[in-house]
Image (tube, rainbow, N blue to C red; front, side, top):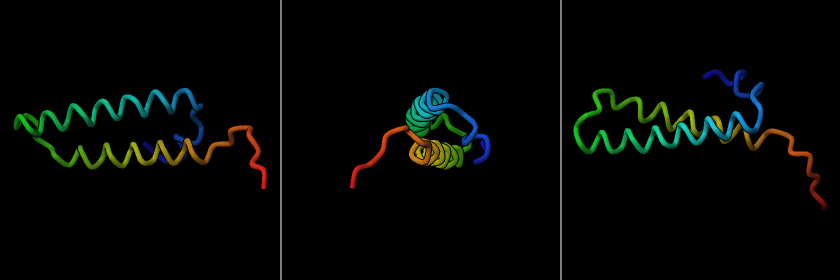
Length: 68
């Protein structure tokens, strides 16, 4: 998924995307242990997707102001 696409999504969409990606990563790890996963590079791609979604969530304005 492109970085620009992540910026246009809402917080709810990003959190569901994050949950789906984490579930997919867990399933891939089990498949790797059972020798079912053919393309192990998908694990790295999913980890990068999770990192991108988390970064997009952290950079979104939350409406809260920090007090200094």
